[in-house]
Length: 102
Image 1 (cartoon, helix red, strand yellow):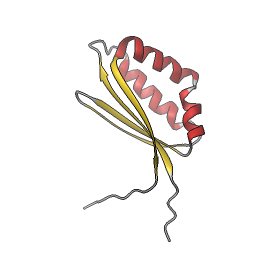
Image 2 (cartoon, one colour):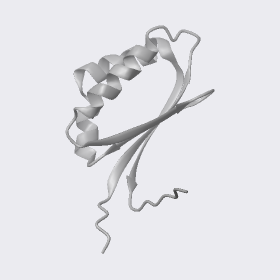
Image 3 (cartoon, one colour):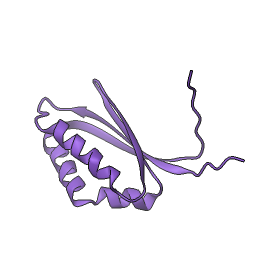
C-alpha cells in the first residue's frame, strides 16, 4: 500500500542583475532559515543563466508562514531592489512522484 501524502512545491525561477554582491550569503541564510520552518520538507536549486529553486512544504499554510517570515521578507525586498531583474513564483500541489536510480 502506498503511503504517499500530497505536498506542495514552490518553484522560484529568476534572472540576476549584474549586482549580486551579498546574494550567495543571503541565499545560504534563507536555506538554513527555511529548514527551521514548520512544514518545510526540502529544497533543490540550480543556477545558470536562469536560476530555479524548488522548495517543498507540507501545506499552503506553511508556505504562507514562510512568505511572511521577517527575515525572508527582507531577503525578498533586497532581491527586488538589487539581485533580480526578473522572477516568477509558482505554487503547485504534488499529487504523485517517482524517481529512477541506477
